[in-house]
Structure formats: structure tokens, C-alpha cells
Image (cartoon, rainbow, N blue to C red; front, side, top):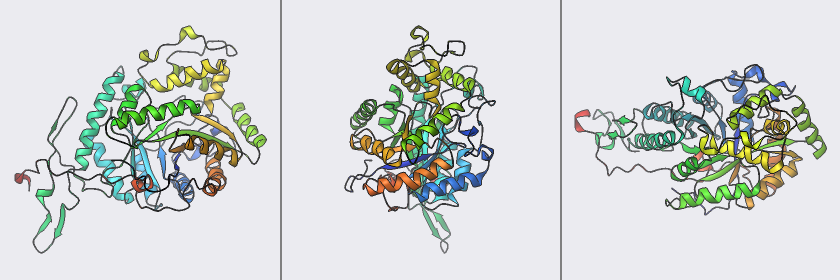
Length: 453
């Protein structure tokens, strides 16, 4: 399913929402609201702000363990699919994307949840597909050690095959609603999937009728070799972290080539993360950036860096460069391989001390941080977009709610003035926002057994 390229090419913008904002010191800043981590009205208000800015979607990351160190940052919060259902009730247009793991869920269970969200929202659901990267998550699901990286992606591939077949197990016209004849649904238009594979055995059909979008928008965020292959096969949009224009161009070219080899021209859409630190002047933006760096809790930053690199750096001299000999290779990483490589390459390329690396990662955990005026932020977005490095951006405000307000009020109008971004919604579903077709259920396969009718 390729996107519609008959219309002029426009940016896609997704608002990546975290309680206090994306800078790891945001919770200490007076403009943030960390006390609202479990306040549904807070996230409803953020979603309404993003919708006012005509964003394609909002997105909640998720993990299945407590992230980081409770002492030094906001951790925990609301389960995202439940939260998005509440947000759906107070928004009309904006897409609703949630992370969910293929390693610690079952296909039927998750297919049902996303189908329900798509119905509740009128066709605005999206799924960020992850395989879960941490041992802490594995420890919450009967495991002492994490499942090997490649095996997690094998499971994910089968998981997606099962989920998509479940979403297709009801034809669009299956529900007849003939009260006079006593016929609710045509059993010839509902089918079992009868899947039996290496990881799953699922009979089907799904117990949710076919949804407005057919399937939720399929998003993926892994940039390892396994992740890029998975994106080429399944993803309709990719959230990625890239530090330089050259790296972003190479990543986009690689993923698109892999997808084209599978007959998926124009897919997936590439949305790098960007942390926009805004000011009325560049000096004002730099001042805010320095203020946030000054609020960082060093212990938290060292723990985050150690997790990303797979090696404990807490006892190393802070004002010396990261010793090369202590670093593992990417092949030795069983967690987030692509983020390890990004951080290691950043440290080597810019010859950073450990203290400097912690400061650089504080803004967005490896995503590109840009401090400047609205015009300067728009310049960066436009340059990457026109250079083929991005189809849009994952906007990661450093502080919430103020950072999202500033982007919507000042950067969005500048992008609209340049003809790069919509001035109003033209579609009703998330797929329509991203210019993607609705999947068609193929009913050439065996139908639901007559005995179940």
C-alpha cells in the first residue's frame, strides 16, 4: 500500500508527548507540570493544543517497567491505549498513536485493543510497534534474561502477520443488521484465520467488527539492521533518531530501498525526532538550553548513558573522553542497538567528554536538539524535508506544556507561510492525514466455518 503522491508533498508532524517534556531536567523547570503525570485532563489539553496546530498525530511511548531512576525524574504514568481512548472523546481530527510490545503481548489481545480504539476515535488509531529492549521489562514477564534481539524481531514479524489477518477477519459488509430476517451478520463474510506458526496459534476471527481504517496506522521505531528490515516489510511510518543531515539521508535512503525491494514504493514515511528549544531570539533560546542543562541531575544522566552504552560509566572521570576500549560492539548489545551506535558515534565524532555527552543526551536521549528562533527551527525542518532526509518530524518539546504551545503558535504558522504544512485537516482518519490508503480485506481465503454461524 503506497501513499498517494498526486497531491503536493507536505510535512507530517507528530507530537511526541511526555509528562514534563523531553529534556531530562524539564520536571525541575518552573514551566513544567510533573505533578500531572496521571491527570487525564492534562493530556487531553496537550492533544487539543496539537490539534489546534493541525498536527497529524500525537504519540505516547511506553515501556513495561519503571524507566530510569525514580529519585531523579518523573517515571510511571498512565497506560497509553486507555489514555488515548479518553483523548479521543475530546478531539475530532488528530491521530492517536501508542506504543505496544510484540514481545510481551499476544496478537489477539492487542489486535482487539487497537480495533476498539479505532472505532472509539472514528478511525484515528496508530500502533508504534516495539519489541521491548530492556532486561527490566523481561523481568516483569517471567524471564531472568531478555529474549535475544533477532528472536524478538522474528516474533514481531509473526505477531504482525497474525494481527493484520485478525483485523481482516471481518469483511466491511459483514454486518447486515436485517431485523426482519433475524440476521445480524453474514457468516460468509467473517472468517477464522487458523494461524499456527513458530510463536503463535490463533484461530480467530477477531471479536471486533472491521474498523474505520481497516488497520491502525503501523509505526515502527527501531533503526538496527533487524529494525530496518522490519520497517521495510511492515511500517507505514518510522520514528527515528538522527543527529546529522547526512546520517538522516542515509537512513531514509536505506529504509526506502529495502521497502522498494518488497514492492512498497514510497513507504515508509520517515519522521526523525527533533527537540525544538524556542526563543524570541537565538540568545534567548540558548539561555533556556543552558538553564535546562544546569538543572540536570548528573546521577540520572550517567545512569541513562550507561544504559544506552551497555557499560557502567558512573565511575569514570567526567571531564575526560569516553574510553574507546570499554565500549562493546553493536553485535554485543541485546537492547536498543541503534541508540547505542548513535551515542557511540556522537561521542567519537565530536570528541566529547562524559560530562558533555550527558549534557547532549539530556535534551532528547539522542534525538537532534535545535535551539533558536521559530524561523531557525523552520529552516532546519525545511532543509531536512527538501533534502529527502524526512517526510515529517516527531516534535519533542523540551518542556510541556509551554514548548508545545510555542511550537504551535510560532513554528507552525511559519511552516504554513512557506507552504510546507497544512492549514486545515482535509481528511477524517489518521491514514488520510498521512496520505495512506485503507487496507482492503481479501476474502479469497477460506471463510468462517458454517458450524459457527
